[in-house]
Length: 637
Image 1 (cartoon, rainbow, N blue to C red):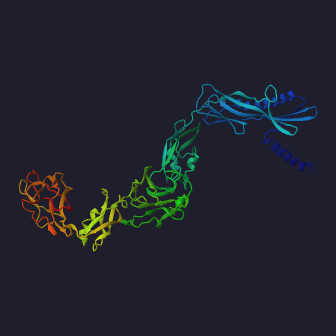
Image 2: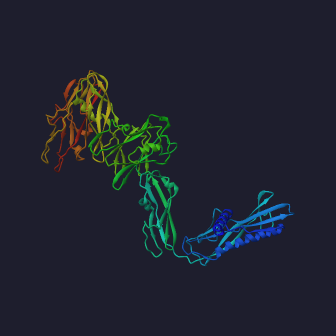
Image 3: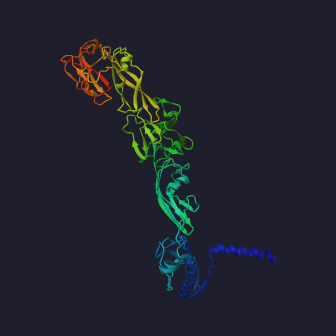
């Protein structure tokens, strides 16, 4: 029986020892009936523990590699029981508590006290020292607990054995150092990222520059001894393994070289890059409420990533539009189109949200895991009922407050980023046509129907609906406009143009599309005259007695000096001037149709070309712009 029970008794005692001491050795208990003697006993017990603590630091050398560590644990617990007159019982527990540690040279050795205040940790730094020791100044106090009449109290005790002191102590310990070995080296560099990029080892490598052992052997980035320390601010900016919000912080690389641990720290920043930003109730943020749709090139494939933008909060897009359409975005695939009419494209057929939709849910609607493959030449349409749309190009923000239509914006996808289109930002111009005007007559007004603001990519194509000219008054026409994309394809848009149908009309009835003046031999003084069969005819069927006049301008000359050879000979006084020096070439009050070129073609009238002073062979082309104006006071004398 004894042999069977002995192991169980041992186990019970062992467990009780652990519970009672918290993994420390059992406490030695001493007794006294003299308070001074009790204090002396307590002090001697703590000094014994302190001696064991310092022996851990002085009995060996701190390693010679950068990052080597030495740990010393302080165990100075003891207990003294004190009786006085056999009436009051005084029971005391005492211990040493570390408060701080300071190295004489932190670049050589760093000293740190543990959070439990029972351990001292020394870490070898990268700096060398002339001698082989370094002083560590350690501060501590004696903590005594006593139970008096069933009440637990604390008091302090000093080396003079006087109770009630509140004194702490500082002692200096010399620690021996092993010869410092040269550690390896690691170099990092600042790294820049943009929204939507993958956050993987290849991205993290961007901040790594080089690493080598102390003997010069190069170490590659993917060596397991290379460990990046990514701060929380960057980890919090990642979603679906992609950069979801902008950040600016530092990344530290640690290299565990064969001869020591070395570190290098550099800046890591993520900015917007190329994005379309859908604003909302932004709560003071510039780039927030509905996210930023980032265009990136990933392995030669363009992709749009729905990201949180500046902040990854999850609030409603705009509480002022609960349950009704607020914002949206659409990807228009152009792979099978040479031209696409954008007039009636609505994001409601693609991705849209009411104001009460949460931001992260709205972003989740985009593509597969917020990623959609696109190609150059595709079009993106963004809508916002408040006009709260913006975009960035190379992280530079552009607002659209200056645009005519800031609630709907089209972008072409290019390899350089988003290119905003002007196709729906143009201004229709009011037209006036005569009663009963023909389609041919109205077509001649096409160039005046849309203000293109000088945009060379814009072409006013045609009337898709003509105005009703069977009654005088206000009506409309529809005009098709195109914009040439960088891909060579076209975006189309139809504008409604206001038209006034006047009682009667004044307009050009006939203007030749091209006039060939012929040729003359070099050195000839013969002039080239307007051909008789190329008539310019004005039709005036207005009821008023107002006169009219014809103005011209020579433009787009192939040769810049050509206007010097194009002359106007006045049929009244036969004076000759350069055509561009004449404001009006014809005035009349005639009704019906008038051929203003009827008297042209002789030496004394019309537009002529005079090459008599030319000294070399040449050919010329230019455009004559014709303008018909009403003169309310009749013909100028």
